[in-house]
Length: 586
Image (cartoon, rainbow, N blue to C red; front, top):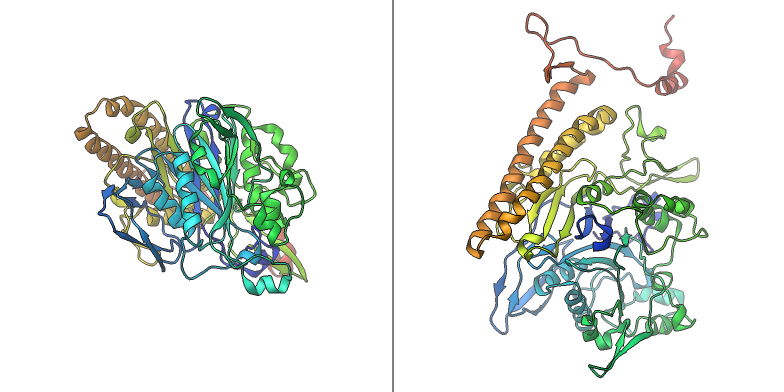
């Protein structure tokens, strides 16, 4: 999601302290060789205090020549420009299309000289959803994105995209070229003409590796030299190619693509004067800051260390030391992951690190790993921060997109979709071939200002906001239901895949729709039961006793006396230190 103008290079320290509203996201990327079943996966958490969690759907359609489409800013709903529609679009379920192409994003802001939203153009959200309607695989997506960025002004800030299909995973980073003239004039450095479009670099994640980005640009140096000459085709074949030769992206040996002016634009602006070979996209267009690391790259670190224990050596960097050794763009995990582990990797509060949000006094007596905004605050003239972890209370929706090459596209692609906080959500399987969105996720079923009793977003928020009050105890009850549902869904998918694979085209849509609707209904039914259970068990700070799977009653049928757990001793000491002379028993 988009982040506020206060976040110029990822997140500025000023943004921590100002309390500016952030819309920050987290993406993790997994290649075929890094997963147990050989699927590719990307994750996405759309984190915004004003984003409503729902599952978008666009039908496949054919259009007459000359048809135009209105581009609307995804964040604000503001109309931008009109562009020609294509003759045929593909169906899109959330952030995956019928061909198992999935795209996620995080916004990193970048140089404040380029933080200039124009009146028209194409925003980052429209780039994603238009590309999903027009491309069948990751390389086609790169071609479509490059085409948009060469034809139209870019409306948003610096952006990182995760792109995956059943065989490949790519990271694509861009930033607009239209300068903020006020900022540029102040710097006295800008020598480039007022221009449109964007500069960008895309890199394929090597098979067997994992990657991540979280509101900080991640691509540093990138290959620019040709590696091979294809004599049979009579043309040079590059491992790295510029947008001037974007068709080369379809050659399998190509692993890096970049805009033809990604370096020359930086030179013309006075931001880079080294050799082409030493050029770093991140260091030029989104230089590291304390907050760009601590509030952003640290989330990638948290995932890296959970899939490879040796990554703990980067903790000093993750805590914001700009002089420490920087994490690599991608790493090889020390074990292969499955879809359940990937779901769980999206559940993190820095547990087990120096930044563990359950361990400091801010967690309160019930170890709640959440801090209400603003993220920064001042005490006695000094500035401090709250951690920004992968799991955060303001998530609108999140997903794990899983693409499986051994199955037909409409069956092989699944978007495991959840709403609200990733730590307490349930990832429900939505096949990419569905044509009907379950009611609980459907667009228009409630909104951020309208409660709906049939909306998953509102049900999950109701449960989670109750859990935050007695977190240490209540999260255990929640996780039992969460784990049971997700493991059951995974089993149901495994059992159903072969049946769906053998179905005729006319049968398939009905089967997929019925399956995803059943899973969503089961999730809603179980979560409503959980909602009622938690209220009964924990009402008024008491904890009801249980026996034989039911709440315990007296011999005469009444409520057995509940437990009243004490606060931890350290919390009592804090009370005594603050107010002991008043409350001491005499």
